[in-house]
Length: 306
Image (cartoon, rainbow, N blue to C red; front, side, top):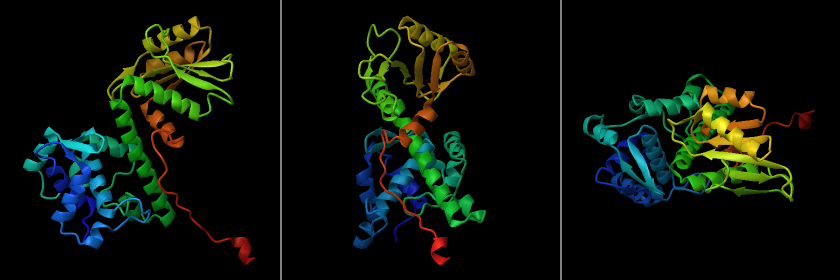
C-alpha cells in the first residue's frame, strides 16, 4: 500500500542524512523501501501528471522544509539541516504534522494559511482536517483545500524569489507589472538596475513613445529585512529628479509602519508591494507558476426542472 505523506516524513528526512539528495532518487528509494508493487509505483493522480508516490514524497519534503528540517540546495535537490539531524536523533519514530508544530517556522506557515492541520492529504490536495471536523460541506472542504494549496505555493514562490539574484528579481518584478497591464496597449518595460540608474531599477512605458511612465524600485530582501522610511524618501527623490509622480516600490521583505506612512504623506503616488502581496500577484497573473489542473464543479440547473 502507498504510504501517506506523514508516514514518509521521517524516511525522506533520513534519506538526506548522508548529504544532498535528488528528490527523484528518493522517490524510487521510498517505493522500494515500502515494497510497492509495479501498479502502485505507477499509480497516477487523477490529474495524470504525477505518480501518487512521487506526489506524497514531494509533500513530505515540503512540510519538512517549512519546519526547517531540510532545505533546498538547487532545483530538485535538498539536504538535511542541523535541526533535521536532531529530529532524527531524538525525535519520534513517526514524524507528523503535530511533531512539526513545535517549530516556529512551521507555526508561522500554518498561521499564514489560517488552517493548521494534522491529517494526510488526499491526492495532491492537503485537505484541512479542521474543516472536516467542523462538519464542513464538500464545497467548504474543497475551497479550504484550494486555499491551502495556494498558501503552500505562495510560500515556495517567496522562498525562490528571496534566493534569486537581484538582477533576476528586478526582471521578475518588471515582467509581473507588464503582465498586470501596467504597460498598457503598446507599452513596454525595461530593467534599469545598473550604475547611474538614478535610484530606480525599472521603468514601465505606458504608451509606445514612453511619454507616460511608471518607475519601479525592486529590493530583494530576506524574511527578516524591512524597508524603512528613508528608502521611501530616497525613491521619492529619484522620482522627483525624473519629473514623474508615480512609482512602485517592491520588496521581497516587508515595509515598516514608518515606510507606509511616509509613502502616504509624500506628494507622489507610490504603491508599496511587500513579499506576501508580491507572490499573491504572481499567482494571480501566472508569473513564476502555471495552472496544472482545472476542476469544473457542476450544480443542478433549477430552470431545467421548472
